[in-house]
Image (tube, rainbow, N blue to C red):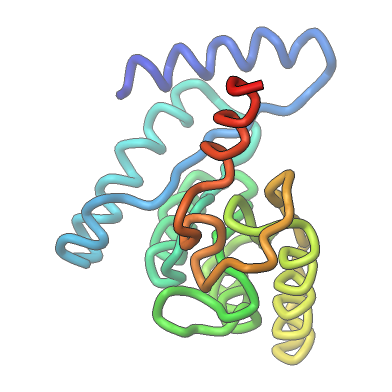
Length: 184
């Protein structure tokens, strides 16, 4: 993993020079969280990943694709140890995280942990993501906190999915789309 991350950082930095772009280092949910929920063990995984990003001097850090705000907060806490700006996104919809923590409260916890940017990614379409980010914004306003907001939605609509977004569907839309492409 370390050599892959180092090579990825090198490639990203090389390309970034061509367009005056920034380079981010990213972490996402860990198998350790679901298997043991030991804060020290989970944070150790994030610290190991952070070492590469610090060595390669990325411009900012992203904690993304989290289903549990508790784990996302732990990631932000570790990433903030770097002194670099941190963004944090969760793959949640309007119903909140997997423990029922509402989007507004997720945003508040992430900002209090040190995230400068909060938002959602990957499991829902743009309409659902906007509704969720609006709930995050309302939560931040109620707590008198400020942060930039971001959204990385799916490129297709997911009106019939459940709490976990498209992965709750009986068949992933990706497979159906590609199957129809090759069968024509």
